[in-house]
Length: 285
Image (cartoon, rainbow, N blue to C red; front, side, top):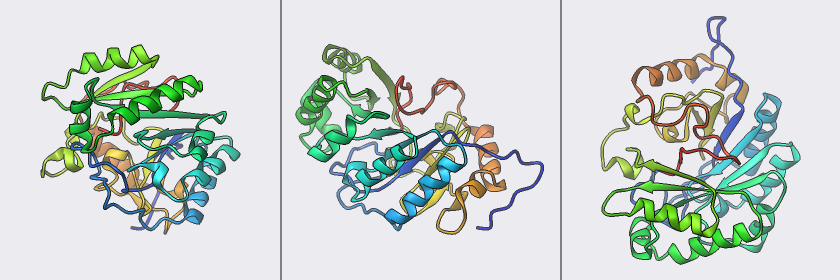
């Protein structure tokens, strides 16, 4: 794709960037928006590519990033990218399933400028485990407790998958643990959550691409992590980030989304912004 701009297209200045690092994950959640799992890979973006993107992001006004996937802590360069982002004075949120956390990652989680987000499905282990496909409830819950004990900023998203999930009980369980930033989201019909159907823009909130963009593991840029596998507006392997987010393709994609997306899915002032205070929108859905 050739990146073009003209005077009728307002130059985008994203403040927030998703680094959608990997399709590798220990889990195979039934609703995963990009179908990540144990068989996934880290794509074609190297550590050199990602650090260059971070440098470009800081240079064009990005203030905060979110590492997501897949499971970002499984990426071999994930920890190095956190260090690099902090060195650029970027705020970093890590969206992790909190199933396995190494000593190195616990150290990074406690750094100034870093916060966590995680998904939680039920206060009942068997229900939570049915969603993730593995016996993960005890580990995730214990690591939520540990993060709070260490005063690590953390928000939790409850994904309502239906099937007698007891969402309100999950909320109360998180509150009892001490989580204060809690949101509830529905399953978005992308990836495995689409159950074999084509991507549907009516599942989006309509604010995609506004002050934000996502970069996938193969370098494709899109307005949102929910669109990362099917709505590319450019690739950082070929073009600078600023040219892509300020280009005609991004503007046209944003206009297309605004024309079809459902309004009111997320609060427009808080939607999908990482860090604390957190948001009510959970991109893992």
